[in-house]
Length: 242
Image (cartoon, rainbow, N blue to C red):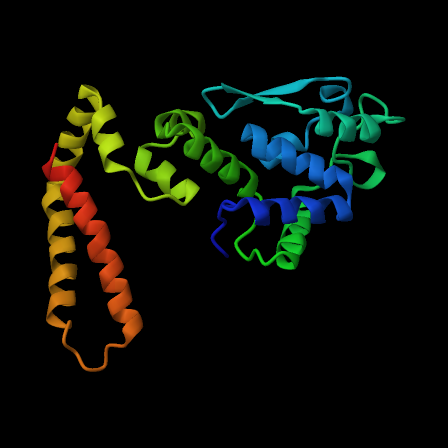
């Protein structure tokens, strides 16, 4: 299974939306709701016409912690909704499948995959909407902790992986609470996990150092090493300066 990634650039995002419109306007509306609220696909599929008809916004409660997320409709989207909702009963699903029942999650996934191929997106799936929402929110605010709370992730590092961004260690260290620090200490000492993890990293770096001059290494290998060392330099600078 391919790793599902957020859509990171505006041009590709717009191309994807336009292809969804060509396929069926209901898929475009579904996607807009997802990338502007962070809702799960299965929750979007439960929405009905009355949830968007003659409305200016849609407010959703995300995750087990019920974090509120509001999508304010602009004039263009309101026009789309007006045309789409006309002559549809209020209790009809926004994204209808066979016999006017909510579309199956698998069918929505197939549409995403098909449209993704047309615009050159391989890593696309049901989570693309909320990952794109989360990445856009992080880029606008830098608040990884809001997203961590929204998605109920155990740590900021999980949320950074979720949105496809490198962890900002400085932000993470700045916002660590005494309770989180105490929990980190406990987990690092539990079963000697801290030293085991450090030794694993040291062993990996020693292997790289040992094989550094191997004549069979190609340029791609040194490119990866250079990227790794750049990331380690940044991480160590942030760690040592705290």
